[in-house]
Amino acid sequence: PADRARVEFQMLYGIRRDLQRRLASEGYPVRVYVPYGTEWYPYLTRRLAERPANLWFFVSSLARELRPGG
Image 1 (tube, one colour):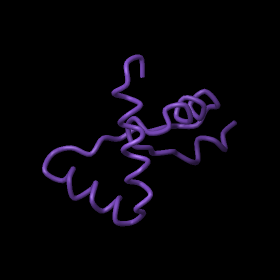
Image 2: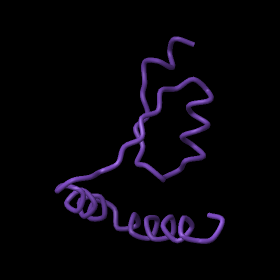
Image 3: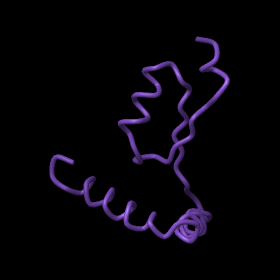
């Protein structure tokens, strides 16, 4: 439906890829972004300061990716 084109989901690369795929398959525009360059570290520290629980989420996501077959 045309309503879906009125909203765009922007998500950090590697986070909730299952949700990214589902939204895209349902017709929603999904933009995946990667912080890079000289601003990646300040970006990360801002996100962690905004919500300290993000640190656990980040570490657990990283561990899943590094696991064989992850």
